[in-house]
Image (cartoon, rainbow, N blue to C red; front, top):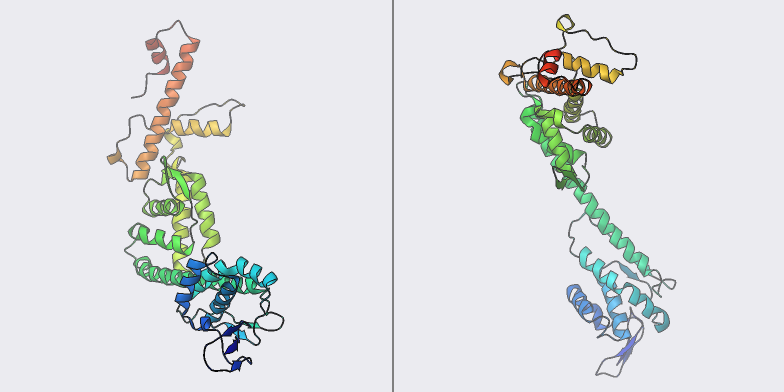
Amino acid sequence: MKILCRYSGIEFNCEHFPFGLDSREYAHPVFAIRQDKLISVLARKYPEQLTPTDSYLGFLALLHSTGKIDWRVPCAYHAETIDAVIAANMLDLIRVVGITSAVTHPAFTMPAFVITPDTRNLATVNHWIGIWKQCYIDFLEGNKRAQLHDRIVRREQAMERLIKDPSKNPANYANQLAEWAALAGEFPTGTVPVDGKQIPLSEYWKSMIRRAARGEAVFSLNDTDLAELVEHCEDAIPHGSIYAHTLMLVLRRAVETKKNFLGLGDFDIRTSTYRILDDSDSAEKANILAMIDSAPIERPVESNYPSKIAYLRAHYKWLAAQTHREQEISKQLEVEKGDSAKTVLDKLGGAGK
């Protein structure tokens, strides 16, 4: 019995009974092979162990197994064209069918394509495969978005209870705020050098938010990095929510704290020493001298200050004053090489304690 395959257009023989089927009544048995077995055979045996006709039948059978091909007419096998098309697309088709067949989510769909007299030569099959692949990528991205949204909502619900509790301050939910910001702001991937080690940028930014929220060592935050984090959060996070407001309040407060860390907030003009500056002296030098003049005479003791920041500010000014005094001594020694060190110290009023 001779049979003309309804899909491939190839004529094949079947034993027994003197009759023929040539009106698309039947298809080659390859089209009945289960998809997973078909993929396994093609992946293992193509191209070395398959003839061009075998490859042609296997390719069409794999297309058919997707359920996304509408056969209006059989394909037309012409070795000079079809063989090249199959060679260029077989592996891509195996991959795409393999990954898309594993997705059972009802939201995942792929378009169907039609075999017509214009498309029976499979010249556009590469576009079909590309579209299926893009459908899969879009589905994954959409699914990730949905999962990300769910995670953000769960974190927002937990944070809302903390933020609205008047007895709580950002220090109590610093971790939650940092994790929420990383999700909502989609902190970038990649690594940055921190203390001689490469760490994920997202982890570095989260650590900055935690320190800002807790008020811990805010002065040690890198100005450039902090500005970059603020800019990213301003651009990437939707604003108007209580969570975004709290985050930006924490970050901007950290920026202001750093600006004022070496400020003259505790400078009392009534007890300060006046200096006459030269016309050539810069505003920067004037600020440095003002800071030095406001430095405590004795080494600061932390227990004498109302907060860690106040103590560190005073300690830094004291250190700056000692450094300035040592520099002045060095200059004086250069000028008065004949004087002893003790004489110079006496002239300068003694070294700082």
